[in-house]
Image (cartoon, rainbow, N blue to C red):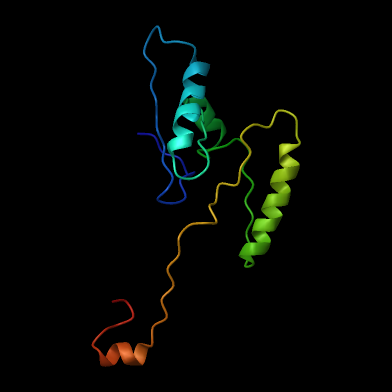
Length: 127
């Protein structure tokens, strides 16, 4: 079983590829899915993470060796801070595939319920 904590929403997926003996260069397999899949995937990118046990242990199960988390009540402010930090992190030599894992364009559906009217119709807030 392969599992990471990097899956955020319904649009995220993990694909685990196992190579057989006498396979071609691993780098060819790594570049191929990104090149071929990304144009057909709604959204904007494909990230390729090593799935070996050493990397998973060293990363403590996270999808990246460096994991920065920002918490606060101001979601938009948090996003701005994250974007600035990402820009600075991308300037560090050797950094690859830097990204903001959290999708901010996930579809939302807000419903305002008048509990009194709902109760008159026989509905509860849960329903």
